[in-house]
Image (cartoon, rainbow, N blue to C red):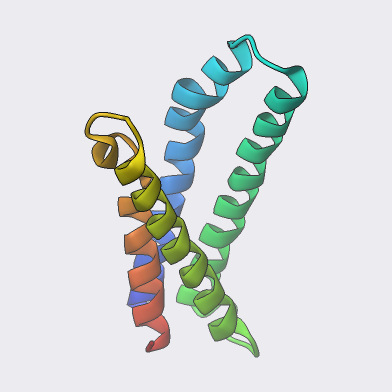
Length: 128
């Protein structure tokens, strides 16, 4: 068992639940109801579910590795890949929040906090 990776997996699982619960209500539904180009709208709808898929697969993978259900060849590399993705997601979201015109954008675009924690605990779990 790897406690750091289990913690990362639990945070990733909570992030996934939040994505569906809060993200659907505060982003997906208003975006689908908005009046703008239907192709752009469908692309954003697809992007929401691409993120959904990535979040689910990442959370499951982290938990499988954390609980030693998958401890074979490549598991550490996959965890580092997931960690790197979440680290870059966090950095990019922080940059966009800072340069945006959104008042207190760093707090309104808060997902970066979860991404940092997932990346940190994943990297700690692999010894990086």
